[in-house]
Image (cartoon, rainbow, N blue to C red; front, side):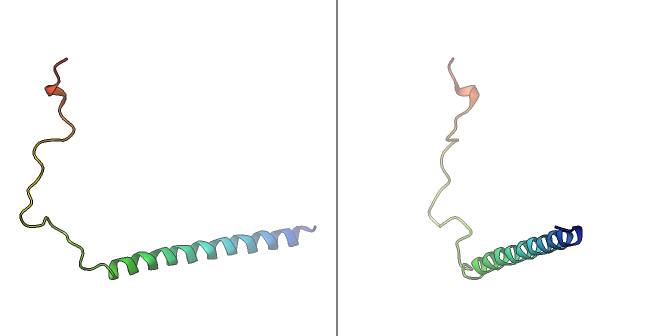
Length: 66
């Protein structure tokens, strides 16, 4: 295999990789944008009549009786 053919193959491969990356990025962006467009009415606050939980569920190190 001569050097010019190998260089041409490497350049072609690199170009195809970049094209694939661009296509994947565009597709991911399109899916994300579509997701935002079809979910505009999701709740963004606390429902009325609910209260926050009492205290910390994880506990505190000062509460231990060791």
